[in-house]
Length: 184
Image (cartoon, rainbow, N blue to C red; front, side, top):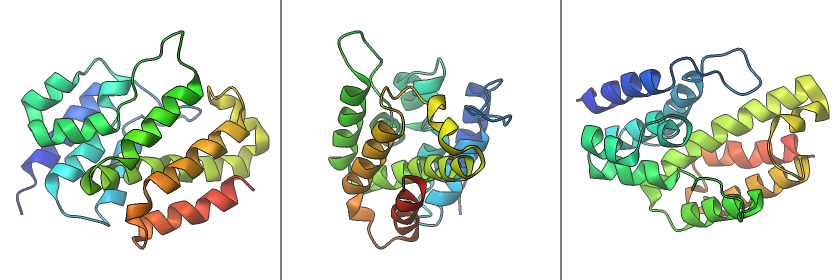
């Protein structure tokens, strides 16, 4: 199996996220994209989808652009990464507007983009679940959601609906199970 695109994506992502830490943790940021890759690998061996999982936050959380992703990894990977990239914040758009747009984009996304997104979202939800067990409701102040836990719960339940085509796959089922445990 040719893993060159995934190998290149992992190195590219590690360089793009160099010096960044995972929010609220003392961990290098790259740990999150690598967990996303591991999750996606339970659903597919498609190297471009796995590369997308590695690269999913590079455009949103580093100076990397979609055009750079396209030049380095091709049109399909760039398109898949774009499904995971939130539009930049602006004063006339609320947190909920931005998140609703992300939910709508993923609901309309092709199946391969939804698999890549599930890697990201499940990794995030796992972290929230374990951090909530350790920190309790103090966890919710870590996020920019104005309504705290209520808004975050709304967003993750909306993601479950948007990613419903993945129903039956173990990562989706774990995601749904963690929703109830995290936001009870």
